[in-house]
Length: 340
Image (cartoon, rainbow, N blue to C red):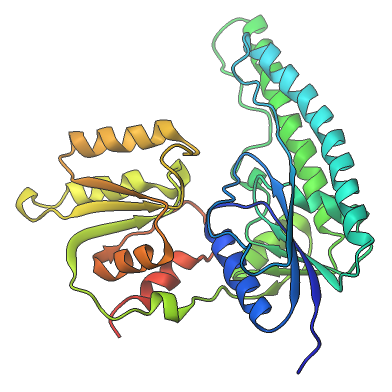
């Protein structure tokens, strides 16, 4: 038998595809006799109850990182400048937390450290302090790739004072994003091995970070998703968190174009809890849209893997239209549950 590794696995407990990937990887590595300890870097996007790794790891510990949301402050200039100051303070606090986490890992006898990198997860900040071999699996580059970090365009109309005020607000927001992104890039470059999920992501990583990575495709457990075919229901399935980037609204709008007598139901399967939605306003918007367009909408919150597999098998079609999302598990899982 090959060597049994002792692995420190760092992740942020996300509820999306990255967590499903982590769940399968850890489960299979543990089945091969490797010893894994998980370290959860908990943040605003964490959902630690989703596919917990506890059955497969030797030990689990957690550090919590919270970034203050000061967008509610008024006037906007006060909000922007206060958020910039909070970013400076949070960065120092995160660095101290990551240094303590690295000290814990460095003093244990791990063979290597695996870090899941995902937008809004700042676990990558532990890299400068680690003394162990490191593997970073970049599910997706920094969230800043979806943002315009340059100064916002100042409206041509209005007084010079208003234009100057707007430029100060935009500049403060841009600087906050820039500081976080620079730290993310600098830390990522310290990894000894970077893995990613597709050649699309490999190209984005090189453009964003200037780092070469190795493609390691996601896989699907066919014992969980390759179920016997089920009768097909008049249902269109849209899977993913209820956030605007997943574009569930486009699915509703498309189904609304179908003749009313033949219109299928739209089912959204989300790994989120009903009380823990990342964007509850968007969820309410989807419900209103479906009602206005006379589309029968059902939301399945946090389905188990068997429940999700049944939805894939029963749906007449899966529609998956996220914005600029890299290669993920939804299409693979749906194909695994399709006709054999």
